[in-house]
Image 1 (cartoon, rainbow, N blue to C red):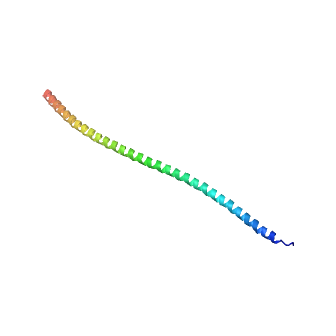
Image 2: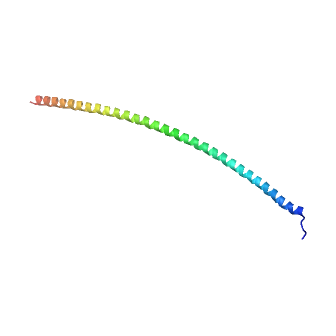
Length: 115
C-alpha cells in the first residue's frame, strides 16, 4: 500500500471538516427555514383563533340581546294576556247576570201568562 504524504493526510480531514461545515450550514438553513415557516403558520393560526374568538364573543352578545328582547316581549304578552283574561272574566260575570235576569223575566212572564 502506498503511503500518503503529510499533505494528503491533512487534506482528507480538511475536506471532511469543510463538508461538515457545509452540512452544518445547510442543516442550519433548513432548520431556520422550517422554523420560519412554522412560526408563520403559527401566526396565521393565532390570527384565525383571534377572529373566531371575536366572532364567538359577538355571537354571545347578540344572543344575550335577543334573549333579553324576547324576555321583555314575553313579559309584555303575559301582562296583555292577564288583562284580557280579566276582561273576559268580567264580561262572563256580566253575561251570567244578564242571562240570569233574562231567565227570571222569562220565568215570571211564563208564570204570569200561564196563570
